[in-house]
Each structure stands twice: as C-alpha cells, then as structure tokens.
Amino acid sequence: MNEERRRELGQFLRGRRAGLIRADQGLPPIGRSRVLGLRREEVAAFAAVSVTWYTWLEQGRDINASRQVLESIGRVLRLSPAEQSYVLALGGHAAVPAADMAAIGAAPAHLQALLEAWDFPAFAVAPDWGIAGWNNAYACLYSRIAAIDPTERNLLWLIFTDPALREMLPDWEETSRHFVAEFRAEAGPRLGSDAHKALVARLSEASAEFARIWADRDVEGFASRQRVFVHPKVGELVFEHHRLVPSDAPGLHFVLYLPTPGTPTRERLAELAPETP
Image (cartoon, rainbow, N blue to C red; front, top):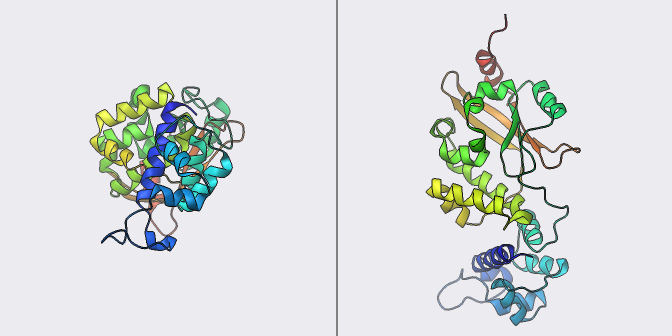
C-alpha cells in the first residue's frame, strides 16, 4: 500500500467513524451530544483489533491490513458496499488489477462501431474518465464534444468547467456529486499514481466546487438512474442512464442514454439529427 493510499484510507475511516450515530451501536452519548461518532477504542473493540493497531491505521502508518480485518472494520463503520469496496481497494485488496489511467486514448474501432450502432446518445469513458469515443446522437445532444481539445475531453473536467454543459443540467448539483462519488469509488487502486494526482489537482485548482465535493470523501457505486438535460434547441430531454463494461476492454465503460417512455425525448432527439441527403 503506497503512502497516498495509506493516508486516504486513514482519513476515510476517521471521517466515517466520526459520522456514526452512537445509539445505532447501542452506545451512550458522550457529554451532551447524542450523535457524536465512535471513539477509536470502541471501533477497535467491535472489530476485534488492538487500539494501537487501529490508531496506526487511521494515522496512515505502514502496517499490514488484511482483507478480513478491513471487512470487519467496514461492518463496524456500517460502510455501504461501494464504501467497503473502496476501503478494500485502498488496502490493496481490489478484486481485479486497476487499469492504467493513461492506457486508453480512444475506443478501439470495433467498440466505436458498437457505439455508432446505438440509436441514442452514448459515449465511452476511460479509467481517468476521459471521453474515449462517442456516437452521432451524443454529438447532437452535446454539440461541443468534437471541438473540445482532447486534453480537456474528460467527463469530470467538463462537468465542472464547461458553463454550456452546466446550463443543460437542471440538477447539476446532484449530478456532479454522483459523478465525483463514483469516480472516487473507482479510483481507489490508482490513488497515488501520478496521473490520478495530477487530474485531481488540476480539477481542484480549476473548480472550488470540485475541491469542496472531493473533500467530502463520498463514495458511491454506479446505479442506473434518470438524467435530465435542457437542450438549447429542443428543450427538456429525459433519459434512463445505463452503463456497460465491454468484456474485452474492461478499462472502458459505456454510458448509454435511453429515452424515458412517456416523454417526448425520442421525437426531440430526431429534431436534432442532421438531415441526410
């Protein structure tokens, strides 16, 4: 476990411990507060580890943390499945090796063809959330995508720095939080790499809102959900937001938008499609 991941693991565990409700663990309040988090010695006792060892873990010291012990601590801290996976990844127990953040510049041709075969907006995202490919329908939805410099064609970067895209998202605050929490969940094994640190530093410098949300250390696994866009030409578009991972390119994931039944989204998308001769 490198130093960056050890530090993040300690800070993450400390934050989750501080946010626990003591009554949920059958513990009395401390002083006048009924919500104050658990003490380190209490977490250590529930997880069956020594107080000294757990203190060192939160301090980011170079100690060995087995999968079983991290899972036990996760149960004590009532971590969600995504949070537990994040902790395991930070501890070096990721289910699969992390893909190199810089390994994918563009989607392979056969996967780009698959994107084009999808009738509705779709794009491919690399491990660093760079946009590695998109179809014509996505270019109709977000017309700036092809003109953006490849160094800035990153989903997180655009969400936080492109005013035109932000204008299209009536639920920008919620959407941006979802994305940052999902990015953090996926970044655990890569934390501390030069590419990851550079991206987070660049985003933090460019956007105080990103820096604030990133500091909250929210972790969230992806879940299909509704996405709403307000397009400047055709108005509101409502989609189901889905995600797929190609088995032969696990470093990529596809974001697929499906028009929500009962809305005029299909018809409005058709209005955006370029006319064919």
